[in-house]
Length: 253
Image 1 (cartoon, rainbow, N blue to C red):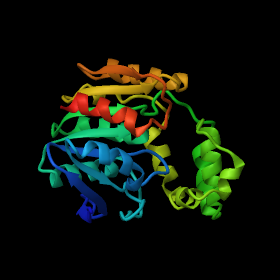
Image 2: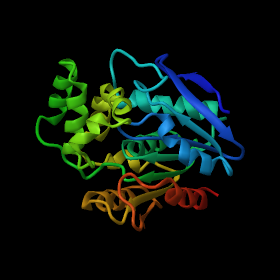
Image 3: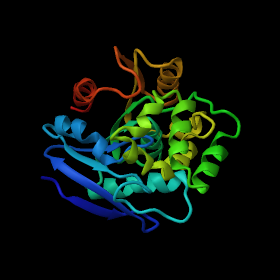
Image 4: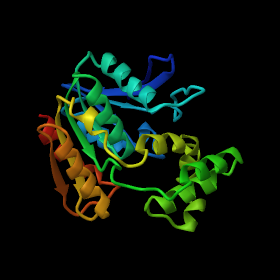
């Protein structure tokens, strides 16, 4: 059984994480409406080969938060985890976590290899959508914020899900949706920053995903020196753990 540990980010925010397995360090960073427990199935496949660090992004789960948010602070959180892992690690990011992973790789050479799955570049929200989500949260309409997020980002959604067992867990993370919107921004790649990435980068996308996913992965591969993109056949945005794990293992070994 793994125990929850805590590392403090540069601004003092406590970041909760779990460490399991043995081998080279591998940090996992996830996307919207997910806390670290969502990766348990993936961790159980990866910790046979790596020492896996799964964590709650700030504002989620057991991690703390700050009065003001910035993407740079989330990158600082990854720096803190990197230090806890000994200063060198592999890094895997899913969705908006993939954007954070690439930004972290642009800011330090401590990540020697980085794999990302469908970082949401090359996407575009409806005008005023971030403000709409913020207004719903201010009004305490967390259910509506989650539902509208899913409707407007192409995520699968059915009204009946509001009565499903997993819905309260998602609603509990609704406050972090503006953070993911900030991470995604206008969907453009920070090309100049990415030119500084020295890590070996693999950008993955699902063969059954929407067109933006392939466009994003290919754009990442073009922007980062030596990076490449690769399709994962039969998968879409919520990629299956047993499908992605062997790809990750092969890339990082």
